[in-house]
Length: 144
Image 1 (cartoon, rainbow, N blue to C red):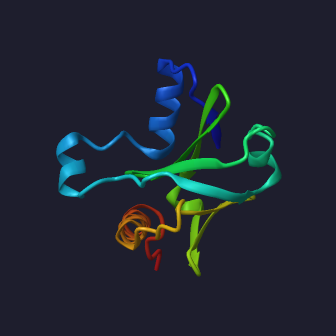
Image 2: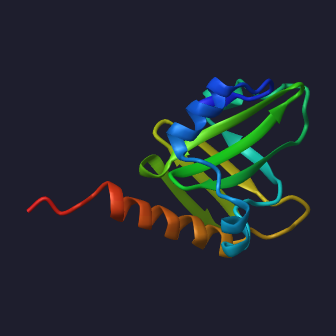
Image 3: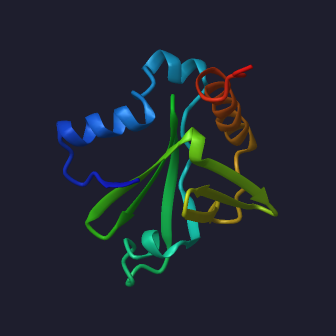
């Protein structure tokens, strides 16, 4: 789900919090040693996400933020700010040769760190562990 958060209001915040969970508290963020990434350069996205980008922008950037029930991918397009909300049960992450690919249902985005940087593998591990914990506790219980 992609949400325009340029002008935030309580209804949008409530929808985001219901969909992927409340933001972590400051103490939780410190214990986790951070919940987000530095900016990442967007290389490719599916048509629905691509249509939100301005055709005039040469380089597009995004960031990732971890939430208790999912992941936020935030990006800007000229004067608008969007977040792509991905619940853990739809999240697929692939990391290959320096490129990070994120998939959710029919949407995808491929990105890399700017300026010949490297993807923070500790952060990816943190996201995958949080996803596994969430799915193990809430979704796929043995029904036998």
